[in-house]
Image (cartoon, rainbow, N blue to C red; front, side, top):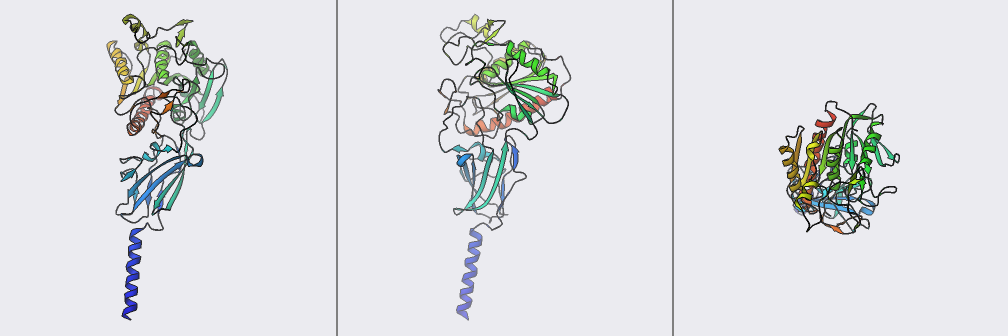
Length: 433
């Protein structure tokens, strides 16, 4: 009898130890939804594990799971792991961050394609989360992340010499509208960038190419400003566009262009410039591309080549931002590796102040971020190893992955609020022309 009692006691102790050492069979992910936009925060949590259990949460995405990240957590006293408030003890990122697994995701191999220096990294649509303990998967969940919300209509534009994609939000009537411009990589701005994000929030958007596609210049060279006037007139003719509420968004060379367009077209109600320049630069990225922009067939004055910086020429190259007839938002990083965007943003602000600019303006400058500030929650792990699509040279965007991720998150909220205030909710004004 004593022997049997001893065996039962040992078995009970072993069962208790096993129960304390491994997650319960009820382990599961708590997700409020599994179908989101790529810029939506996903409050990831795992419940039903044993208090104090060390659990690895792993993220995989893309074909053959080429994107992956992971972090190890210690469950709290209720047997829960909440990524929105808990820092991992180890893993691909450090601090408590609801979306840390997404921006810290890395590819298994270097991509064969090349990327523009200011494009948002392509993000897989489908992702899988797993919670792992002792080498075994104890919970699994799938997530779909969309670049564009369901119901948004996307139409290729190939008329009047234009090349782009037109986004129309659900519902009838006329919508506030934004022209979205690419940078020195050219082509049509992707849905994963601001174009898709803004269209998903009720804005009509024309993502416009101005070089780098068939029928347009091969490189950023001798681009007529009149081309963008044609684009604005095309927008005015669309039944879903409110011609009294039109603005422009650009990044890098597209930011330089957005500021120029603001001076050229009085009807633009807002200018958003990511990684901006206060001056006009020469053409890119071809040795023959001496002139970037023209108006009336004549070159717009640009900065002279390095080593021949004549003060008068440099002064003529400065963009007359005080001529913009709408609100201005500037977004930059202090560690920009492409050009000194934060210093140039400061000069833009100084010029606006000096000329008693009559409209609203803000400049957001971010520490530990560089030339990669864009739509949030895509990978920031290849900031300094991406190649330019035209030159093939490696582009060093600057900043850190974590710093850039934080800058993307905050600047996106700031941008949406600013555009809502000064375009969506703005009083009517003369149409763009």
